[in-house]
Figure 1: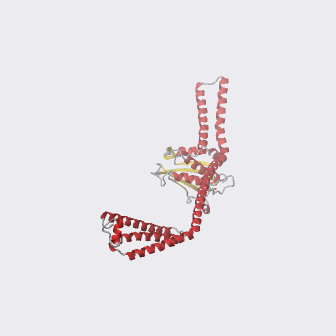
Figure 2: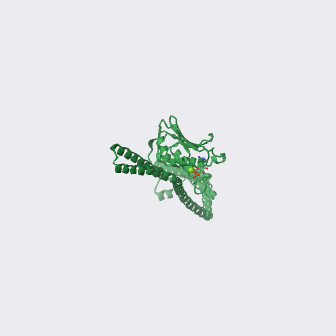
Figure 3: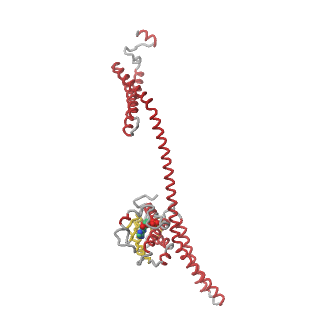
Length: 387
Ligand SMILES: Nc1ncnc2c1ncn2[C@@H]1O[C@H](COP(=O)(O)OP(=O)(O)O)[C@@H](O)[C@H]1O
Ligand SMILES: [Mg+2]
């Protein structure tokens, strides 16, 4: 028989237990290395499958488990190949093969039986992918809507201020008209001196500049400003930009405005349009809260530490009810009547201040309603890295 095989393969040195390549050490090394690698790969696949079904609860994990056993058993048959080169334990090898066969048959049957369930699972996965795409779309719409709402909140604030702003522009316009008429009269009377022309035209120019400032303030308030570069500005200029849009409203309702602590003229690095909007939001809220009270005042107070400035806006109101405190900064929370409040002022303001690395807080320890803005003096020195 061995002789016949020798003839068949034209080789010599065929070993009695069937491995016909033992005479060649390179062949032995090739087979041993490959069998070991294949075996290890199989075992690692089956271990990964096991780890996977422990982590993810699949509806057909028993099938995956039996597939894992099958793959592991395949690995074992390759290890047996290596083992048998030296120990020739064919009964053990046969047993491993029987196990592999059993696992493969079980996996095959399971796979056929679970086909509908697997299809269902794939369908569900497809559906959930579609649903998350839908959700993403909804989120996008929501964020678009929020942007729109933020814009309309700003517009409604502008609308509220419109009366005041018209007044704010009308009074300097009246000054210009009066002065121009005065000049004309002086010319008619022949009493116009060069000094008079200089004085009057300076006054007209300054008054026109004031109108320009109001229009600039209006335009910057309507802008988003979220992509502006950070620039160094004095806190006072930011506050003045906000005041120019609401001062007359305060005056016409006899709400006293007081500025305290601005003497040092500290500067901060910020997106000034955005910080101006926050101050204006807080001033408008303070105005809404006090303009019908008998005692009506608003105080802006500035304090500076080594690395930050603290701007507080206090009004003559008696604070915010404890059950509302946690809600006032939430988007859309308002206690104002429909059409008046949007409930976005504080939440938008908080977002802006936090993006600057600062804080916007209600100081509930104060006897009067007091909001405090804390801002780092240098850009990027706050707790949060600005976007
Ligand atoms: N200075 C304040 N005094 C009293 N309540 C205030 C003050 N500022 C804010 N609030 C309360 O917080 C709520 C939310 O304010 P805000 O986000 O600016 O929205 P809105 O002004 O549109 O209502 C207000 O409706 C009001 O109840
Ligand atoms: Mg508001």
